[in-house]
Length: 295
Image (tube, rainbow, N blue to C red):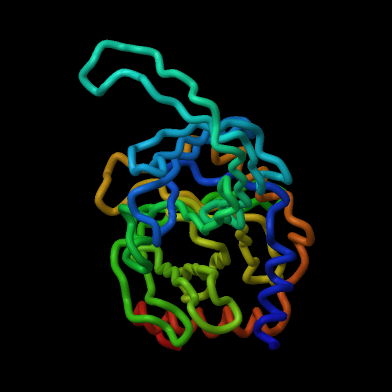
């Protein structure tokens, strides 16, 4: 119960007022064969759905409209089309064949949503992870973490290898050059969050981050000052994946926009409590052992 209360308190003090759903391919891991492409520009969603009619014939849908409730809700008419050009044919405009009702989506996070379809059927959909894989290996690559105090600071890390799990996590992704490590917590007070730290040349904590992993960016994150214990908004972006030298990061304008959204935390600059401080200290000790710097 204490752990649950700590997580609730932490979430309420770090959840951003607004967020944007991840652009790309979404679907249910339990319903292969159909899915949704979601694009968002300036608060407007365009959703295409590939599904099937009752007879089993392939059916494409299109829905568009604004995000509401600070980016957490979307509802629009699910229009269906037929009669367009085949893949190797000359262009022929499709015909609108009416609609099958209203599609509604409630985004729990930028990568998880509750989908309500016409007819009352509902399911959970997620942004597909078809390239990165499970953590810690999925976290490997170059990342940029930005945090905002009175000025904006950026740190670049290149996670190139993994190490065994701590007592609360799934395994460490390590940047040996920067003496940094990140790990998804699967048990304990911060279950579901990723903790990241790096150490300076004297083996002291230099930066510490807590956030939710979102494939190629972070969500709802804070940078915790090692000296004061105060929390400040942070945002992380995957600049280069381990197998893609061309990079996969967000543009500079997107980084500024999303950081501004995530900076709208309530209670962002309050101090962490003693339980959180103790948890971070335990993680730091585990990281030092993984890096071969036990104290």
